[in-house]
Amino acid sequence: MFSKACEYAIKAIIYIAQQSHQQKRVNVKEVSKSVNAPEAFTAKILQQLCRENILESNRGKLGGFIFDIAKQKKTKIFDVVRIIDGDGIFTNCGLGLHKCSADNPCPVHDDFRKVRENLVAMTQKYSFYDLAVKTENGLAWLK
Image (cartoon, rainbow, N blue to C red; front, side, top):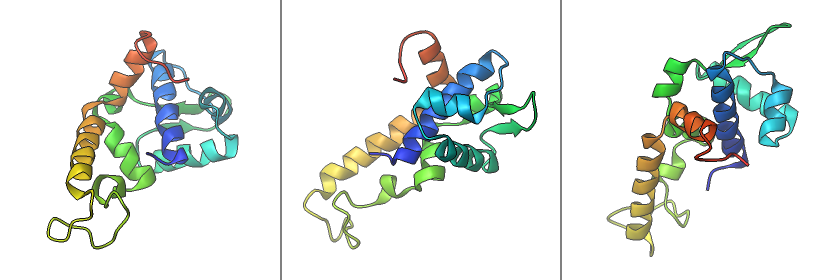
């Protein structure tokens, strides 16, 4: 449903959030290994998330990425999906038609509207703090 870049971003942010709970900064190599993504691709995604003020990074020997706990609590999956994939998944026609609307519906318009509404609700429900805590407590997994 989400692009590969968005999937990697979500997993990477959860991993960085978990490490941040322990006051650990992580480098690109460690993040890419943890989410099973190419290192250069991971670096590009993480840079974008830093530009959008989701993550923070420092260079140097003691540098790396960190995700402030206050930001974790207010940053939702929805925010990251919009940054990486745009909001088309929340607004576009399920069949990819350009003129689909309530006045001009595609064959699956009403059913897909419900799917979009549920997706918006789910992605706005969970903060990255919630997701990090769930995985730390063994209630969810990233593999």
